[in-house]
Length: 282
Length: 303
Image (tube, rainbow over all chains, first blue to last red; front, side, top):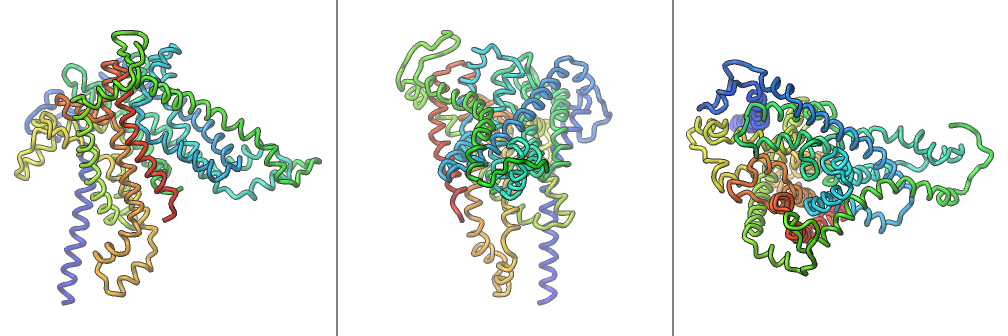
């Protein structure tokens, strides 16, 4: 009886490891294969069976990509958009959250505000893409990075405000009371007392915003298709072009994915908190 | 900071009133952006939904047409097909994600370095740009030279024509969504499992309940609200996604992977039929708003 149970346990432990191995491989293999594809010789792309280990490693796709002034522009635009969106979002979102948290709104109004955040997070954004396109056309901002930045701010600011609102609401009032007694102004209280305590959350919000902005496609593709085109549009664009250029497509995907993977490795906790925010409380 | 002030303000309600203008000032920039970039376009789109306006025919709206756009869309073949595709894709992906996510959450429990490393690896698909995930799977699913069919062939299964047939393309989109978002379920459910008090499970174990019975009778009821919330959350995100389909199938072959979001996007920004696109997005909005209401209710209810 006893021995039978150990055999069963051993089998279960083995099955456990086996399933986890499969899960890990199914995440890892596609990513590694993408990298392999980006250093393959062109003739090996459509070989049957697929070339898993290329006969020769070549960096020609990366070279081609970075010698092309268009690619340089995609990168520059993506960086510009991400930096501005993140910067403005953090400033406006953190301030708004602090304001909302200290206004002492009634529970009902606060519930209404939360609903608005939730709504903006989840309504079919494709609804507002066309009007936004028309507004940008009216303002003569079509095909500029500013059209993308403004559009993204509409998503990221409410999200960060919501995230930070929860943080500021949880901050005990006593922390600020001492500063009030000392006669600190509202701004001093915010800048010198509250913000340093909330810094880890601000960092989390910033990382999340950068992540959303870098990967964003819908708004970018609707208002900026040429001059102001960003990486996400370029990567998606390989599909609609005549004939797929497998090498550059893989190389550019790797270049787009890599910064976020590094981000995720170093700031995993923050990124997760942002991505799952709303599904888990706090 | 410790600068002494002659004007002591002991009355905190005075403070509240004194602070209020500042707080309003803090909120204003965010408020302006949200109104300008979210609410104004929403109202604008409601206006467009009752207008006849195709940009390629006219630079300005041609006039009020009542509910014609709605009637036209509801009877449109492609619109209906897109709704059907959306249901198929989101439904299929949700089932797989919930099942796999919950299983993996249980299998990766614990705080050992090995489990933490595995979890770090498993969440990688989530941080990848959906457009890049789409191109990645486009490479993998190539029916002739793709890795997936090669692996399937190695274990004796003849892989389907993933991206060239209607059913195959739908399956491909489901596969991609599942690959990318199962980690989300894993994370949320994993955190919830970790917060179930151990003694509850120990009592059950002492009572001689099997692992399965403990799960069904103790853990599952506790997890239920969160599982439902996660389900609606994922459903909305999956319905709204555009980028991954754009780069994986481009809606094709034909219209076979047009989802509602993709359909509205192409109607508005490729055919430039602003009226029809706005009308169909408001039909979509009714359903989405209802689901958002459900999420709101779930979050506020104390379970």
